[in-house]
Structures are given as structure tokens and as C-alpha cells.
Image (tube, rainbow, N blue to C red; front, side, top):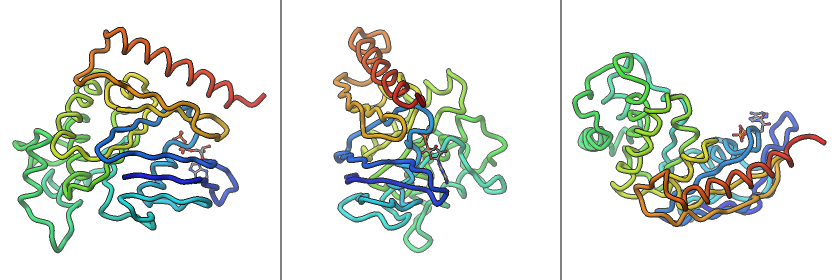
Length: 246
Ligand code: ADP
């Protein structure tokens, strides 16, 4: 569903943010990208979303070369980015096609994220976690085959973060969109993802591709969860060393 082949990105400033990445995400898979700050995780997501173009290689989504933002992918950022003057319903409808989009789709997805009673509320009346649920609803209102999440819960307090991780999995069950998640939180990656991909520094190639073979909902106290935490930490440690200028 997502395929990156030899993808590099050099920004106009000359900075090489992504170098020669090959990555495949299968249909209905949830894949987490982790790695040291600045290793190019968000840039990879932007390339998949079509918000940026690679300077080498190719990004494909649903069998098509990504040439710009389109209906294949919904994206959620760290901040909900809601329009403060629009109700929850109208913010979500913003993700709809103006021609084909139906109000039914809007109310269905708002119910899915558990905000049915808040469709007419304004963003300022919502908690941070609720606002982020609205952002998830807006990303999913057209049922895009791909969901892209860029540190979606990083700005929330620890309790809300865990709550929203569980909630995201419930919403994901709706039609199981192929999901690429950028996070710096190893536990979040292990709770949510089928595979955790560890990126190296400088930038570099993928350092590890860890399969999380645990049934959901996952328990953080499971010994296998701890083993995978250690494994991911070890790989991250190595990435950090690689990232530090000698
Ligand atoms: P991460 O998400 O892993 O923290 P990013 O993808 O945000 O990393 O950034 C990778 C590198 O590219 C960083 O060094 C960052 O400063 C740089 N970078 C990101 N966006 C731009 C931009 N628009 N112009 C120039 N450099 C950028």
C-alpha cells in the first residue's frame, strides 16, 4: 500500500534529510517509525503524504506515484490544527470532497471517535485529547486507504496519550487503514504497531525492522513487550551513536 524505493530528500537549504530509504507497508498494516530527533521521520511522512517531493527515488501509495496531496492518505499532526471559528462537524467536513462529500460521512466518523455529542461544539470547548480526536475524524472522513500520523499524541499528557492510543486502535478497526506512525515513544510504537522501524542518524538507512508479534490490546507488563522494548532501545542507542558527530 505504501512503497518507498531509494527515496532521498535534500531540502533547498542543501540539508540531506532522508537518504536512500526503501520501505514497504502492506495493506492494513500499522508501521511505526522511530529514530533520533532530526533523522528524517517527519520528512518521510511528508513524502508519503505528497506534501513534499523526493529529490531521488520514488514514493508510491496504493499503486500510484505520489505527486501531491490526494485522497489516498489522511494525515494527523502533533497539533490538531482545527479552525477555531468552525464547529467540530464543520472542521471534520473540511476533509470531505465538496462535491461527493455527504453529511452522513461526517456524523458517522464523529460517532466513531466518540464525539457525537460534540458535533456542534467549537474547538475552544474541547480538551486537547478531544481536539486530537477531531483531527483523526477529519483525516478519516473520506475513508482514505492510508492514515499518516506524525507524533499525534506527543503534545498530550501521559494519561490522555495512553487513552488515545487505545482509542486509535478502536477507530482503526472501523476499516483498518494502512497506517504509518511517526513517534519518539517506544512504548507507543510497541502498543500500536505491527512493525517498528528504527531509522539511523545522519541520515542513514533503516537500522532495524522489528516485528511486534503480540495480540492487541497489548499489555505493557508482558515479558515479550519488555523484550521488544530492550531490543528497540538497543537499536535506538546504536542510531544515536551513529547520529552524534564524532
Ligand atoms: P525528525 O522527524 O526525525 O525529527 P525531520 O524529518 O523533521 O526529522 O527533519 C530531518 C532533518 O531535516 C532535520 O535536520 C531538519 O532540521 C531538516 N529539515 C526539516 N525540514 C526542513 C526544511 N523545510 N528545510 C530544511 N531542512 C529541513
